[in-house]
Structure formats: structure tokens, C-alpha cells
Image 1: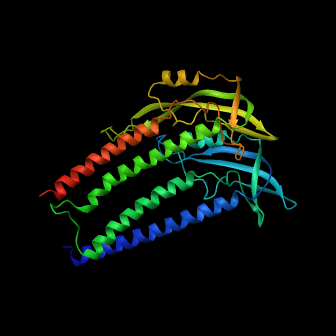
Image 2: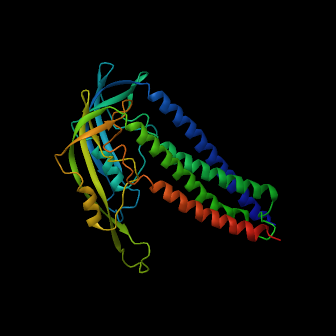
Image 3: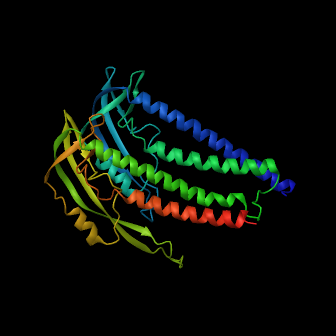
Length: 334
């Protein structure tokens, strides 16, 4: 049984989680509505005026979300010369150095782009109105806080910590729940990738040229280091692939070779071998989405890396299932 103080804090925590869950759910629905509306905005030609990655000088590890892409573009609307730095609905959250660099790479200074302009307010503009990366992250947070709110509300109503018949606290089931949730998201990612691969094989094509094919080295803080007097770094590597192409009068830079998850290598030699499949200046055929020409790929049919989400889903499901079965066995067995 919770005493008066514990019950009060449980009720406060439940209220806070409910408020956060409600806010996240409202924002999720609002973002979705804004994306649907923005995809129908008028378009005009714009020119990229600035494109760089901002990162604090105190940066210590490349797996930190402490970088942001800064992309400014100029366009003309309503008889005015305007400028904006908005890329997507919901803004651009902080991310890793590599992901920010890939975003910036898609918008080199001087390139001509389509700018989506709010017909009711020409000062409101976007480059990628239909990009749903923000929605996926928002959905994950919404589900997590929804689960936490449900557990805390149940505890607050009962007036005590809820246990199974054999004394396993119900909040312990959050761990297998999150593992299984990760498995579900990974399966969704796999299905989406397969659908994209199937659809993109029939997309129109454009002549492109490889502008970069190299290796990005990341320095990651070694979490297993027990000596906190210094930061020990480990290295991992990714392929830096970029290719330029035009659709109509618009310039585009693609970074996706295929629809698989991004390969991360522990050895530079492996990353260099993967990058060696393309060379700077090499002509390529680019498959682009006719509805969103900035969404493109070089190898729509390749299976390379496509099973990674399914493998991760299987691991997460097994781990979550084993933990869940263990809790059920010790919690509800006679």
C-alpha cells in the first residue's frame, strides 16, 4: 500500500504523463494535418543560399544528437524576394553529425530547388512538406508516454503498486513491451522498404553523376570505459555517397544507393570496399519518385541491407518475448 506521500507523487507523475501524452497525441495529429495541407501548397523556384552543419565546440562523441543542418534558401512570392530556413513541418530536430551532414549534402549552395509556399502567407515556406521522419519519432514518444501514463494511473487509482499474483510489479512489463514495440517498428520499416523497392523499380529515370563516394569516420565514446578520467574513443565508418541529377530545371543531390538500412562498419577497409562500388565522376541512372523528385535511389531492386530491419525485429521480438514469458511464468504461476 502506498502511503499518503507516495500516493501523492504517483498521482502527480500520472498527471504529468497524461498531460505529455495528450500533448504529443495532439501534436501528432496536428503535424499530420499540416503535412497533408503543405503538400498541396504552391511551388516556386528557389536557390540555396547557405548550407552548413552547426555543432557545439564541446562536441565529444559522434553518436550525440548535438548537430543541426542549417539550410537557407531564397525565393520570390507575392512580388517579394523572401528567404527561409524551414525544411520540414515541425522543424528540424537536433541529430547526429553524420545525419546532419547528409541533409546538408542534399542542398549544396547555388542549387535550384522547389519551394513549397503557403498561399495564405508567402513567408511560410518549406522544402520537404511530405517528409514523415518527424511523425515516426513523434509516434514512438506518444506510445511510450501513453503506456507510462496508463501504468501510473492504474497505480494511482488502486492506491498501491500493482503486482501479479506472485509479486512481480506490473511496471516491470514495460521492458518487454518496449522491446516488442521496437520489433513492430522494425517490421514496419522492412515492409516500407520492400514496398519502396517494388515501386521505385517502375519510377522514371534521369541521368546522374557521382559527386562523392568516400568514407565517413565517426569517433564514438566508448561506454564500456571504466576510467572516467578520460574519454576513450572507438571508431566506426559509413559510406558517403552523393550523386547529382536534374528533373526539369531543378537540381537534386541523392544520397541513397538502395533501400536498405545504412551500413555501419567497424573496419575502414570494409567501408572503403563498399564505397569503391562507385567513383567520383561516374555516370549513373537515377530512379526518382515522380511525386517527390528529391526522393531517389540508384539500385531499386537490390537486396543489400534490406533484411537488416527484419533481423533487428527478430532479435527484439525474441528478447522481448523471452522476458515477457519469464515475467508471466514467475508472476502468474501457482
